[in-house]
Length: 320
Image (cartoon, rainbow, N blue to C red; front, side):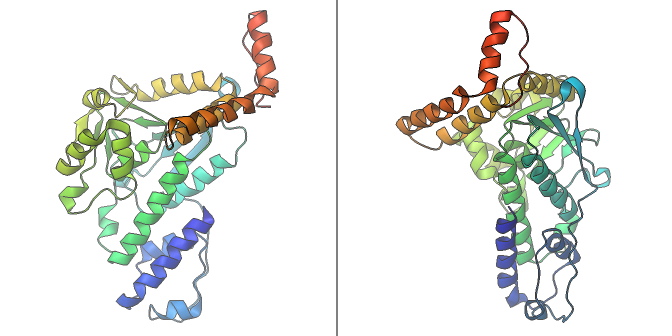
């Protein structure tokens, strides 16, 4: 991930030379958060000879909580930027990147829930106030970073659940699309309104949405920028569950607990088999399934599952 981000930053530096201006503070903060070192000759292109001191501090806009006791293995990621309705600015993006990387390195994690601490909103999309201060090359760099972060989320080896109460628009919906499951309240509002701003969804929306709901429905939603409520989202296949307003969190936790009780190795290889199998032909996909099945054969968890079944008790899986 760090290599990818550095490459994006290098692209930004290269493409920004023609503007001959210092990058905005928001983009500098993003470069800072990615530990990207700008040398003196490069920074001179932005009319400054000073060297930046880079800081990789995480964001206060994203909180990671590991549940305990019987829920050990479940992780909650909470978006917490109430003043901006969880709009995707550089600080929130930095927090998401660091949090997803932490989850990827946590061998005890079995399932992650992406939630919001802000009432009646999941994520309102791009921070347009911040965006207006950016030049085109800065926007390009930011959206590329957002896209790579959502791809990192999608590639996490454990199941991920988007918990949607209220608005999930633009980049907010694109983040939810990168999750494995989506659960919303009836008062949820989902949409990709970018064409109304004369742009397109740029963080995976044009690719993940048609793969989820089909080509025709995706074109309808993207071309018109139409927003749909929770019940329509369920009928379109955009979400897995639609529950009464305010109940999405409890439903997501119910599903997370069901997943958490299963063999963690089996869950990881099942996700791998499904995700990678969809990207290839059936014969190759079946070969992949066989390889994934073999990964589960020589595990202590498989033996524990058989023993628990024979003894009519709940299995105690260890992920080994």
